[in-house]
Image (cartoon, rainbow, N blue to C red; front, side, top):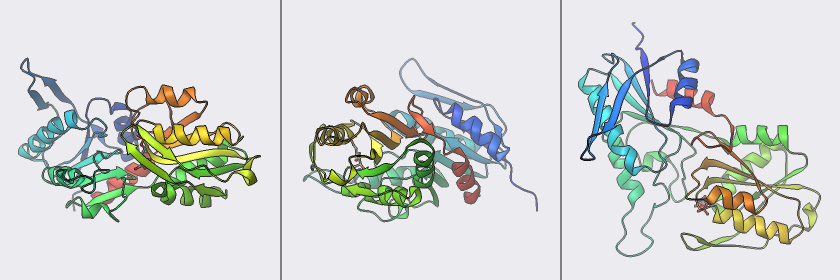
Length: 296
Ligand code: R5P
């Protein structure tokens, strides 16, 4: 049987990861032209042959609103040119946190976003989607999806770089990553209590740290957005007399000047390369390549 060829396309800003994936998958990188018309509408053109190929669109989805239309147009265009399938590789998947109606009048936008993407891509590959009140991505996305878990790579980084770590999860949602990372790294862990009063107003419980004064605290969370969660936790640990902490996030969203603010409180910041950022130290491209293969 003839094997289906794969062609990767990078949406703007995803060139490094696309190059890595193309080497790992031994697949070509295709060419597109994507630009705005003078009136602000989006123009897309596929310049490479996609007929009968599996088209992989690489686009991480922080600041997702502006990315969605180019992705939609590219996916539809690829299909109109005879592509056999389209796979969206979105290492960071947006909108996963609005997974319930918190206040009357709101919508469950994670669901709507999932329906939108499931309407134009045939499959999805992502990294640690924020599954809090949902147990699996298939509750939100109707297309087949493959998930990379960063925990193992994070614990390897910790083992190679931190002496005597104690893992700290800033809230109960982070327990899933922190407990796994701690187990893999053979380190103790603690999970704090967080109350969010507003987008940038976060309260974190004072941790019991007496037993860990000689350890290096390593905070692990999936998303660092405003960084308020990390900053609050770092402040508590500092007040409690602990060593300067290391903050590890899977997804370097860093809204506004969140990264600078987090560094200002004395934290070393390390992230995975799901969103290109200067703090990226943990490369997940080989796990992503393996998951892409699994969708085909
Ligand atoms: C919580 O739902 C997530 O796991 C993160 O803790 C949260 O997204 C971090 O947000 P921020 O950086 O804005 O405090």
